[in-house]
Image (cartoon, rainbow, N blue to C red; front, side, top):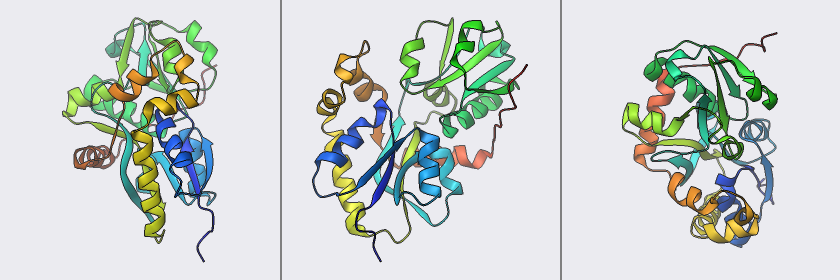
Length: 257
């Protein structure tokens, strides 16, 4: 039996507000929205609380009975700005990297770049207490994602934008999050989702105003129109295949004493 009101898990960041706006306003998609950080979206979908989800790209290969749906993603064709490793030393001298745990894709992409571009094998630690940024050692680096990156711009001597670093290495764009649905989800529902996302991507300014991002100290419109690329095309799919095929996995150890 078809669930009467589909449940959609999506991310609660600035870069997804066009999608959320479209889902709320397009009209043909009656759905319950479950908003959470990226890792929470994976849990909501994997544990059956959502039928459709916007999930981190790194989690997609592990999902059972799942299809990638829609022509949309959260991606970047150049610098993404909100996925960055920051440090006070050049990355080649970094010994420890503290990883924001909210996005598995960004964590694994940091591992990929460490191995294939920066040629370093740092200690990996979870970043749960942001106060440690103020006490950083000279050889420490921090992976920050999402809106909090704006608060830390310019505070470190070096910033490595992960989408930009990936592009320099591979010549390809990147997709950080994809829309997925369980196999067997109705075409009508996927169709309604696609229409909703299209409306959202065409209504970026309205989405910014509705969510109060026009009152922030940074330029949300510039970010959503110049840094984020919402179209999931063959080139981004090929980029993700390369990323998935690498098999690189980063597992942070417990915090140092």
